[in-house]
Length: 88
Image 1 (cartoon, rainbow, N blue to C red):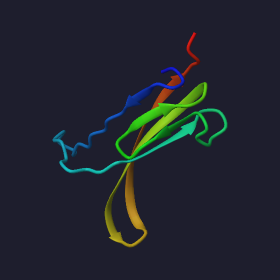
Image 2 (spheres, rainbow, N blue to C red; image 1 turned 120 degrees about the vertical axis):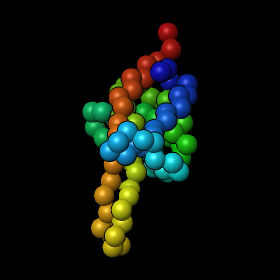
Image 3 (cartoon, rainbow, N blue to C red; image 1 turned 45 degrees about the horizontal axis):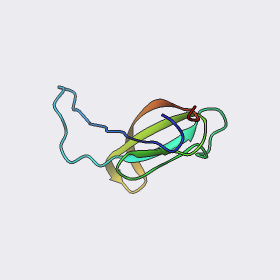
Image 4 (cartoon, rainbow, N blue to C red; image 1 turned 90 degrees about the vertical axis):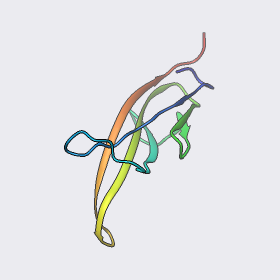
């Protein structure tokens, strides 16, 4: 991905039998691969990444489920690496 470009990520949740779980709402976030933070890009609540700086980014999709008691829940997290470069 080049600085200034956008890319939409998608995530899906499946049960133990491989069946899709409907209506799962993921929380999207990014972090820089080297120093943490998120100075190399932005991501919105639909999974749309906008590259703002050169380097490596991890894109995370997080789903929190089975909240039995407030603050006691399980999370499912998936991530993908993304490389951002300056247009030549």
